[in-house]
Image (cartoon, rainbow, N blue to C red; front, side, top):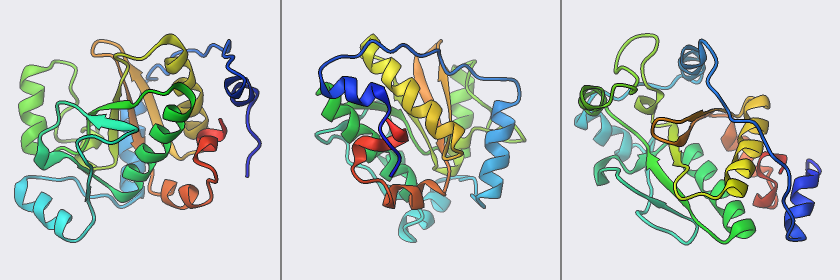
Length: 207
């Protein structure tokens, strides 16, 4: 198991002075996300019928509206589902955050169909398209949006550290968005195998 970073030791002692730079999107980041989704052999969801088939086959699994460590806000009940490894990522990240800070994660984006994404782009100018090389990876069911509201500066810095390390290790693609402040995280299929080696969950991202 990877050794804990100094920041983890500091958190256990009630200290946290480490700061981290924002996870700004770089040119081509959405294209690279889509290429990773293709390598992971992930289909894009077209509509409700395909969504129902994927749920029945357990290719998508439901998330509860609220747990002790995270809650889902603003996502229609029918879309409150994710790939199994993405759900596990949410559970582990949220458990670690709850342990350190005593507060839950707020999830504001999960799986989307092309129909839903088209409606979203009509009202939000910064939403990714529903088709093409730069389509939203929420269509795969593997992406999650984590709201920065109402996170403290300490919580945001901790998430930046963890998500950056997971990105460097090729387990997720994580960027920060600022117009509607949140972390967008595309979780790679290989996270499922990584999650099984992660004991305890406090070491998520090596942090």
